Length: 486
Image (tube, rainbow, N blue to C red; front, top):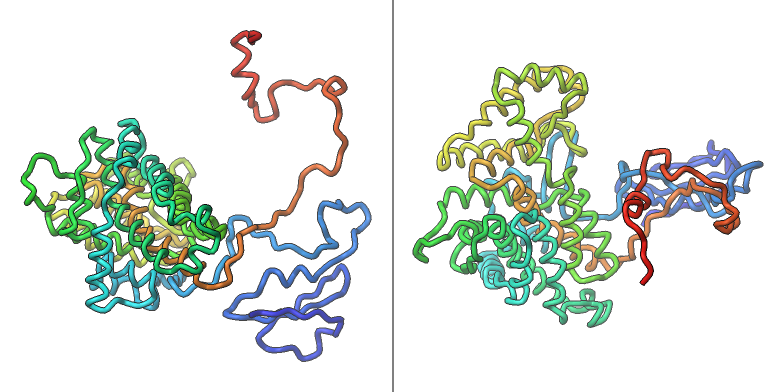
């Protein structure tokens, strides 16, 4: 545990090597903060208290200690984790110590999920039991199926997926801490493991249901004799063929590799949402719904869809140079390049490029691949993009694969969230098992109005209905109808 001690000793005095000294120039006070795992506790800065300066806002709360402001968590760690490590400067990713390229080549999604959640690769008997349990928890309650069937045919598949998981907690009251006690998942690990299996098992079924609603077809029951990704493809595609129908094993394998690549990616937006919501000790189904909603956003799970739309807009290899020039002129957006974490090539994109060729052998070469290759090659030869560390990421190629396999664009985020459930559950379990869980409660820096007294409406100054942004929300809806008395 990192500690901080306060003193008025001059900084010239020898300090512990593995620490930093912070001097508050307002008061002259200094604190020594121990560095642990190249991090310091933000709470140490609460010791730096100062009286109010002349004219300073009391809302700054200077007497309560200094706060650390880090919008969008650019350099703030919210947890200590043993699950995933990313070296963005070297383009390196590993899970529990295993490099992602080895897992993609030699492992399977369910094996990788076990590794993420429980910390070690399973033995043969453990993997057999783990796979059997998940594939025998794929059925969805009839009442929940009926609820899902009520969704409109043009509903976004992610809306269906999120709604289903949000409702799922109502079908497992024994797994709800609000009913069974707040320490349910802290004291009852077998029940925790059961929900993990349930969530992973039912995820593909709910995903397939969302797809079948989209194409106006009846639901296809899951099959426990197929692999995880085979079963998903079967439930999505099976029509009037005999029950012996099986999806092409090459496509199932390609999808399995993609699932391994998407299984976890450290503290991204949706995973941090899972941890944040889970800190309240709510049930894991509600946590998954919240995390999935975060992934639903176009800045997160919708990136590969944006890549396809961009490539289609470019249209042909000949148009690539002009498009890149327009990007430089800020007239176009370049999707699929660069990453919040990586400053070199996304290591997953190297693997996924090989998967693309595997899929093209079955489904035919995706026409947009030539545009994608030309765009990638041109960008990597252009100092404008390389100097900004804009290299292809995993979303650049995954969308092409999904399109070649026949998935509609709006289904892409579902193919992202299903495998990411393994990472969500791994971080959720880690947090509760740590024994250090506290409800997440970020602070804020208040910059609003100071204290003022209420003024009755009759005494207020008249102001235009439209505000400085041109908004005219509530009056707009009531101005065209007459309010009548009831």
